[in-house]
Amino acid sequence: MKRLIGIIGALCGVVLLGACEEESPTEPPKPEPEWAYEGQWHAIPPQTGAWLAVAPDGNVYLADEDNHCVKYFTATGSFLGKWGSEGTGNGQFEFPNALAVAANGNVYVTDDGTHRVQYFTSTGSFLGKWGSGGSGEGQFSMPWGIAVAANGNVYVSEVDLDRVQYFTSTGKFLGKWGGPGTANGKFNQPAGVAVAPNGNVYVADWGNARVQFFSPKGSFLGKWGSPGTGNGEFDEPLDVAVAPYGTVFVADGANDRIQYFSAAGSFLGKWGKNGKGDGEFEEPISVHTSPDGKRAYVGDDGNVRVQYFKKRD
Image 1 (spheres, one colour):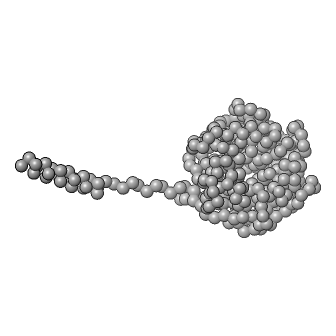
Image 2 (cartoon, helix red, strand yellow):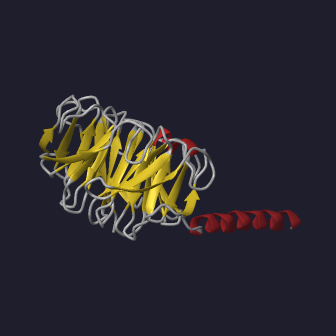
Image 3 (cartoon, helix red, strand yellow):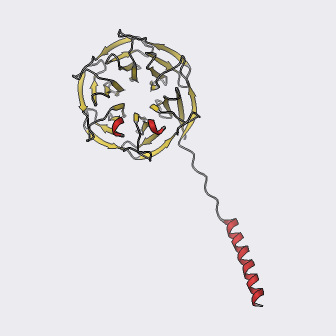
């Protein structure tokens, strides 16, 4: 009898266990990423460098470093035109590094080899220039990142001199800040620059593996980041962009990804990994959002292409 009861008990246990297993809830599906791959294009003719900027009308401008020109495209990559050639004359370039588009559509370009900024109409007609080689006010040594504020002021970072200078829309010197170091407000090869809707200035502090942000006149406001591969860590942060709603995007170059944050640096998300497939990167060096902030463009330098991503509703 005891043996029979034991057998019955064991069978009941198996039945109950099976019932429990059948009724256990399945794992909830993983949420879809907030940013989804939408499309890409390769520059025509062949492009070297992938530093980009998006205009108020949605067109995308690219600085073609080794071909010494600027190219521009529709929002989905149809080629519209180009301007520039190698040289030191007006409208010519010696390794253009980066570019930015003002609210009125004018295009500003940092030119490494000639140590100057040039600016143009949206279709490339030369409008003006400023700068020369040196360390004085309004002079440059490897000007890199550039951004234009809503009031027209132009911010330029300098990799060699570890500083940011800012100017009127026509190049009148207004101020500067920075210097080499790791303290607040100091830089180690500052690269990309962006201006938020409220006027604050964000700088990708490349060599210090961090992002710093400042008032429009350069007062230090905050920072985030450290070397590494974790969330909120960086390996060669090369560019920074601010969406109309204040989210900050960082091109995390050697980590082959884009990370994005709140205006004060709280980690919000990321996408990308090393590779050549859709949504994968080989050293993304620039990032920018569309005027409405619903699309993000990435200059995928190692893959010689631009990829763009859509923000899910």
